[in-house]
Length: 91
Image 1 (tube, rainbow, N blue to C red):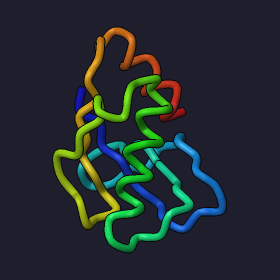
Image 2 (tube, rainbow, N blue to C red):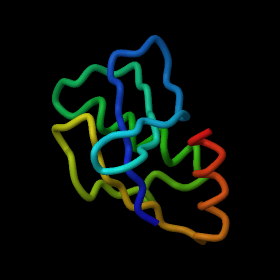
Image 3 (tube, one colour):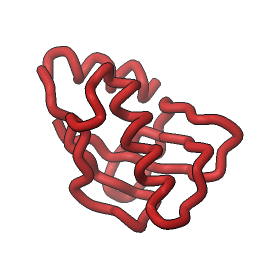
Image 4 (tube, rainbow, N blue to C red):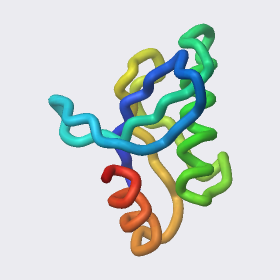
């Protein structure tokens, strides 16, 4: 399942949840403590998303946005299980 993310680096703690209504549509907000240096924030965001969906880190793949706050990721798994988790996280 493809998921749009809005990453907020440099947060006080890592949190996955909330909605960002951007030009590409609603995105899941991922706040990470890591700074946006050398891909650290992207790596932390992918790890946080995997944990939020109850998936292995290898099940979350970056599709687009390596150097952007707006990212598109692919989360492998059963869509019937992932979709309700996404809806809950977006609320």
